[in-house]
Image (cartoon, rainbow over all chains, first blue to last red; front, side, top):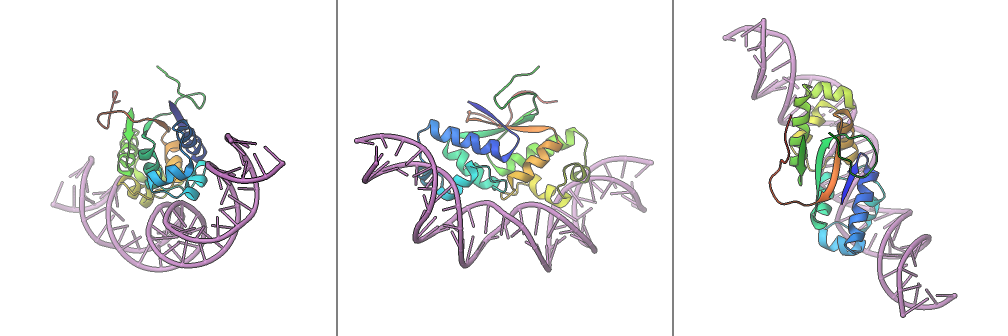
Length: 82
Length: 82
DNA sequence: CATAACTATGATCTATATATCATATTTTTG
DNA sequence: CAAAAATATGATATATAGATCATAGTTATG
């Protein structure tokens, strides 16, 4: 699983995808992460002002991490380049 | 270049590293990205409240993107540099 | 080592994220 | 379909990010 993100919306999609894969409701994730369900809803819908701290709380609860790389060409899913 | 990030501090380090590699001053990056030099300073030093929007403005200016993946084991850097 | 370039700090102001509660809306499922 | 579960919305209050200006430290360099 690798989601490319260049916008808050991409982040929201990636988080929602991971959460569903782990069969957690927003409320269950809220409990795990300490972030409120209402806040998770907004973030999954692409809230641009989401704080890094909050994002990392969610990443930790979902066992995710970020990787910062040079931009690749192409689509939302991972693409290897030379 | 690939920086793993699990904390706002990791993000700050990755951004600073990329900026220096591109031989940009904070002021030059500020001009390119529309984010203020003072703000860039704070972010590079790990400001936890950094907004996603601001992060992505900087990523765009530095030609970076994020990849969201399952957590790996190991250290902050993997793969080569330069 | 002087000074120019760069980075950090600090203040004020406005905008907005998040906590929190309540509830509306949508989706799932028996 | 109806009930239940899940998600979204909306309000209020508090905290803080970022714009902005000024300047203090720090680092680089002729």
